[in-house]
Structure formats: C-alpha cells, structure tokens
Image (cartoon, rainbow over all chains, first blue to last red; front, side, top):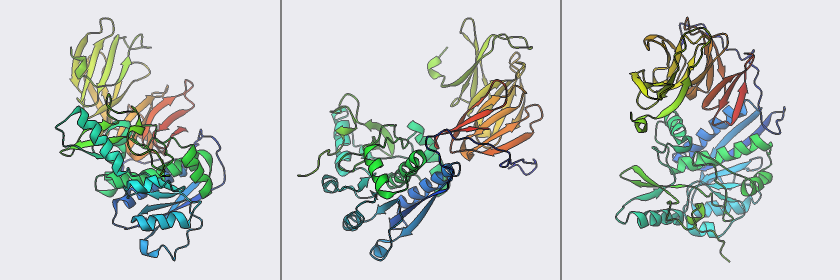
Length: 271
Length: 164
C-alpha cells in the first residue's frame, strides 16, 4: 500500500510503556491444547484468540502457543505444561479429560447438555451456552412476541454492540467465514485466559482455574459482566434470531425474572 | 432540523482560533450518513450538511484554525476542509482505516489505524507519512500532551495505553 512512500518503521525508536499491574520483565510462555476436530469452527475461534493474545503479549513479553490433537490421541498425549485444555469433543471424552487433569481448566466449546452443567465438575468451564439457556431466552421472548419463531444463539455475525462489530470483522477477515457460536466460545476461552495472564502473570494451571472461577469479570464483546457460575457455565447475553437477523437480546427487558443473566439456564448443582 | 437522523460521532467547537478568523461553528461527522454537519455555535441551528466521504469519523483542527481535518475511514484518507468557506481543499492517504487522530502543536497529525493495530503520523500539508508504529488491537483514541512530547494511543481490545 505504501510502496511509493519511504516508511520509517521505528520499532527501534519506539518507547512503549504499558500501564498494567504486575508487569514482569521476564518472558512468560503459556501453552494451550485444543482437543477436537480440526474442521470445527471452535478451532478457528481459538486461533483468532491466540493471534490476539500474542499481539497483546508482545508488549508484555508474553508468548502463547497452541497444540492441536484429535480425540483419538487423548490417552497417549502428555498434557503437563498446559495452562488450559480447550475441547470440542463428545461428552464422554470431555468428562474423561476433566477427571484425568483435575487441577487444569478444561474448556467446553461445543457440548450444550444441561446435565453436564448440573454435575458441577470442578474444572469444567463451559463458554458455549446450555440448551436450557437457549430455551429460557426463547420463552422470555415469546412472552413479549407470542407469534415469534425466533431461536436463541450465543453469537451472530451481525452483532455490533460492545465492539462485537470489530470482532466479527477481524474474524471474517482472517478466516473467511462468519463467526458462529463455537468460534466465539473458542475465542472467548483463549481471550479470558490470556487477559488473566496479562493482568496477573499467572501461568500455573490450577491458579488459573481458581482465578477464572472466582475473580474473572469478562467482556468478550458481549457486555462487561460475564463470569462463571458454580456449575462452570459462563453467564452471558443471548441473541434471539429470526430469518438470520437479530430481533432481540435476552435477558429480555421487562420479562426476565430475575432481570439478570441468571434468568437464563440452571443455577444449581444436582445433589 | 432532524437531530434524530444525525448519528453523532464527534464534534469540534471552533471559537477564538489563534490566527484564522473564528467561525463559531460546531462541526459533527456523521459516520453512517457520510456527511459533515455544520452547526451555528450561537443559535445551535444547522447551517448546512455537506457530503464529506465514506465513513467519516475523527475530526480535528490545525493549530492555527485554518484547516479542518476529517478522517474518512473507508477511503483510508483524511480530507481537508476550509472551515470558513466549507470548500474541500485536498485530501491525503492516512494509512488503513484511519479512525481518530490528534493534531500535534507542530501541525502534524497522529492517527489510529483501527483495523491494522497501528498508529501513524502525517504532515498534513504535504501528505507525507512520517512514521508508522505497531500498537495493540483496535487502536482508538489518540491524545497529545500539551508540550507535544508524548502521544498516547489506546488499543481497545488489548486494554492498553501506548505512550509514544
């Protein structure tokens, strides 16, 4: 673009100060592993998150790496040294991973099963919404618009609020397809982890798990108030979609009880 | 006068400029309408609305008040307007997706290039690019210290200030 202009790319003359707490001068490396199908859009979201984490990380001497393995390779793979496991797998493989690596955050990017939430697995982090969250959102909307055929999604490529427009734009530019629920779930898992590393310098998996469950407040381009329930489910805004257009957001104002994100999905652990 | 139809991104108040004749006007870029609204600063009536270019966002004045700059993001340019006659004087390339900018006391313009994670600086008289700097994701606001020694760029999605 600037072939005719002599560019002075002044990395050597640039002084960039970073105003964040706990800045370390040593290089920190954090390693992720994705378990699942390489064709799943969740992996594209993970890769988008990784690219952004490394962009942020270059100002902070922080580097993020990603390994990708299929479900079939789980039993033979060495999982030590990862800060988190990102999965788009079947429910049995997911549960096996959580129990084999109890101190490590295991993100669920694909399974919407409600019982899985009710089990309250200690190291389970579900960034994808549950079926119950979707049906609760749809029921709320139907109270306002009885004839609506809208269904609920976690994300939509037309979503513009909370800088979603920018995320959709850069995801599409990099991956040539629209960002969907799985891609957002994958991106969010990496983003919340790398943001935590940037703020706290935590690289230990069990400290990271603890921080994510207790202290995280996450924006994720869906509003600045997302955090995890006891069930391991990420509380989040839902979108109501009809004819491929966003018609509403849930919790639906005036209808949702309580009028918060906790009107969507199950809150409690099975006894 | 339909303010409801004006999607206001930013406004510049022009009172008592240093050497150019003060116009008392308020200028507003309308990002989705591709226009610049000119408002009388005393009566608050809209004087006129001019076509300014594709996706106008950042707006600023030269230090002497003689030139108004508007970033037209989709064209990757900054357009230069006479704030008195409202004539478009010229434009210059301003990097990819220029969003906001600040005018340095020396007259140079420091720009955030939103979709490229970069900030850049230009001489607005010649259009020459002076420097291009890597910053964080989705750079947005640009500010310059009154002594001109520091330029600060925010990167919205990496949650940082870059002090240059």
